[in-house]
Image 1: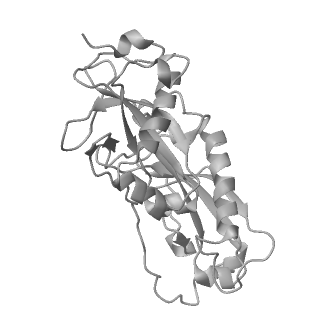
Image 2: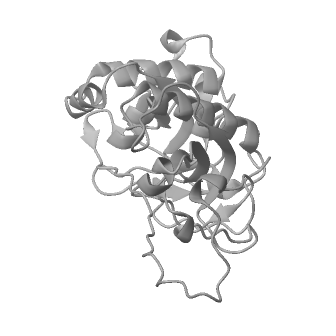
Length: 287
């Protein structure tokens, strides 16, 4: 996350688990169904995520138990696709699947998922299943990992929980001049609050270069969101010195389709207790 002029490195990592193939089957075991006849189920939860999923590694858990990901939809590739392996993340076929998962995730959660600390992940069959004819893709929602939120584990379904699961909210926090962002309850003193996101249609290399150069584009676009959040008619109406901070997804998620910058209101020189939503310019003024 970045405050204008101040960099706090924020990384998003992916929790992954992998499992090896089991031993050989003996004659008294039931024959496993052909891989092409198997597909994962929507509405299931999982502790790990595998971008190329083998049937032997498919291990759903009850959503009331500890988990990190939830399957919101299972779709099917149509049209021309590679014969020997799933589409690469850079291909139009994968991006089409990711766009479907994007919309499905918002519908499943009950609100725009980018406004919560979650990410969309897409899993496809492992090469052996793909060669056998499997053409499904699995859409998952799971928590992001960044400097202020490294180990969120869920014990309930995300379905319809957009407005009723506080652990997912970006919410408020304290942003020191150096060091890590520290999330706090918005009722406690804080200097930073999430206000929304905006999209940028450019490669990750291009957006990261602008981010590293502290390009004014980010602050300018975030100010527009801040204005709407506090309830003023435009960025020009904000008090001089209104600050912003912002956060980027990692390169893999950006290139897959999450080309959205998350914006935060930053209060220079003080802290507030309570949200500044619809607080007007008075809430931003420091004496």
